[in-house]
Length: 112
Image (cartoon, rainbow, N blue to C red):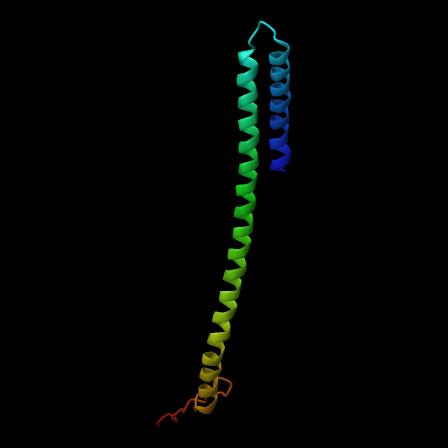
């Protein structure tokens, strides 16, 4: 995307620069300095757009790599926590506390 956007002003600058060089070689009396300035501006804009595209692509790749690293770290943390969770469940199963078992309250009969 950015290479195409950068190519348009760059090619226009190359065309104007070629035209300026042609008139310089044939020896016209006019200097055509505004054309030379526009050539320079277009070339600089084209190169800047290419560099901007390169930086955007590098940021995109960097973001994808960071997301992949973060996902791997989360998975590793979950794997490290799993034995701890299994240990807690095993202790609960061995203890007298069992949430599945109904606890019947002891009710004393009313005194008469």
